[in-house]
Image (cartoon, rainbow, N blue to C red; front, side, top):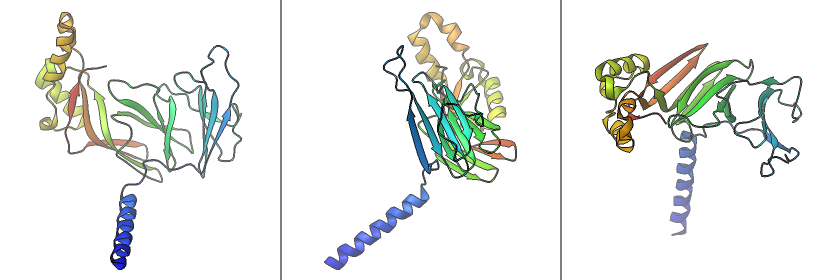
Amino acid sequence: MKRTIKTSTILAALISLAGASESPAPFDRPIKVDVVALPKDELNPDAKPKITCSRYPAFMVKEVDLGEVGAEKLALLAADAPCERADERERVIEDDIAGYLMGVSGGFVFFRAADGWNGGLPFVVYDAATGERLLDDSFEGDNFAAIRSGKGELTLDFRRVYTASCSLYLDGAACAKAIAADTGLPLKQLPDCASAYKAEIKRSPGHAGEIEKLPSVIVYPVEVAYVAGDTLRRPLDGPASCQTPS
């Protein structure tokens, strides 16, 4: 009996380890995170202003958060830079999408928007070494399904939130062709938008004409690959859904 329990325990542990290796955490773990409290703001007494410095092997990402919507500053510095509010050597990220640090994978730094848009969360990716903006998009949910990174190469799997330039409900086939051309989605994978628009019209019947014209928001599984300056988006198998802008 003791021998059986021991064998089962070892087997369970091995299965657990195997599962962990197949489903790694989407982002790299920082070597160290320094948090420095800043003086309180009398005009915003509930806020807890702070500097957060996330250190990785080759660089540091600094986030200055004053308790407002979106960080007051996001910057890239050397891995051993002091965790201070201002540094003449910092490379400040000035980007309308970048509201907070999301995470790091290899030499790629991800920033997310301070707020969601059309049911998704916009994000932007930067090269940690050069400070170059590489790509941006928007995803549904809390995180990416998978992130794979190497030297100069990045691949992301997630449910993309894509806002079309037309109404799939009102414009039908013409809009479907435009969406398919822009996203690569097969026509057969495009969702039926009728229920989403009808629900919105039911809530605001007096604005039915305006609602019908709203651009469709399509959510679908995608693989985004960045290699040597080029970004390729490839739809994956799986259900797509439709909603109106929010």
